[in-house]
Amino acid sequence: MRYLPLACVLLGAVLMWLGPEPHGLRGDELGDDSMAPGIAAGQLLSVDRGAFSSRSPRVGEIVSFHPPAGERCASPPPPSSSCPFTSRTPEVGEGIKRIVAGPGDSVEILAGRLIRNGRRIPEPYDRWPCVTVRVCDLPRPVRLPAGTWWLLADNRNAPNDSRNYGPIPTAWITGLVASPVPPKAPVAPHVSHRHARGGLA
Image (cartoon, rainbow, N blue to C red; front, side, top):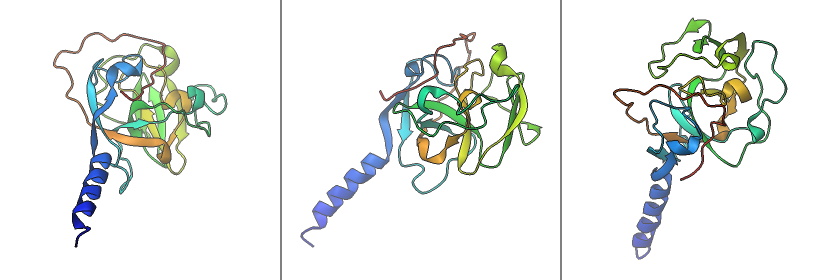
């Protein structure tokens, strides 16, 4: 019994480590407006690093993850297609994106809108027209391999997401990002060709 207080202290420390980080990822470290308007530049977000220790990620969740090294496709994709396979090595840094499809799903992009398994998916968080032609129309379907997830920017004008570097393995997803409240009056999008990457605050 004399070891019980020490055990309680250690358990509390572990639970704090697994719980949401009050100093998680900042929107301004994305490098552009990839998750706007839901995540504003400079907005502090909580990241639950233990969220996926007992369950799999879910479609619709915003997650932190390691993009592939160089944020490039494993090989040049076919014409009018998103990247079907990511590289085998993850980056050290992290990014923030939304899961829009999971293992076995078929995905394509038409005018910036998601088509999953042949059906247009309602996306209330995608508020701006897609005008970056290279990533707005990718009608050739991509089938996601087992154990991978399709991650997209809420602002489809941001080029660096699964359209560019392919599906992300479950092991590269590092945490669940608390969904912020979207601004009441979103400003006009800033179309940037900088990398949509994130990092720890």
